Image (cartoon, rainbow, N blue to C red; front, side, top):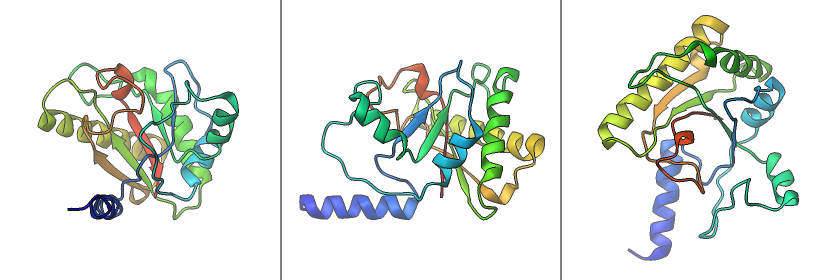
Length: 184
């Protein structure tokens, strides 16, 4: 298969699977408050597919002007949703972030769908991490529906396991154990 055929095939597979390639991700730290206005702006943005060169710039390594312009292009946000060890049970400390996220989702048009992506770090087997990340994403959906009143038909759950670590970070890094949200 030629390089061009490979690129086209990869792009088509990504489109068919509903996965955005090389998306910009706003990663919230555990001590940061989630701003519902930012949630609405990021998740309400039209999804775009971007092809990049071999080197991806992380927000921490980009120049200030690049970081400022990237802030307006983000297409997903990641929250450090905490779970008990080897569990899909939410810890109480994560509820304020999820409540703010829900407030942001409610600012979007009622027909705007959101994907909840469960992610894992590189520890463990592929099958284990995919199943656990799926359960964790489903737990977040249940919370958003039950505790905050987000309509369940707006939320789609995907478990990606360890297959999509944050760019520029060690695949074993704890920030890869995350729940990420993007608009569809």
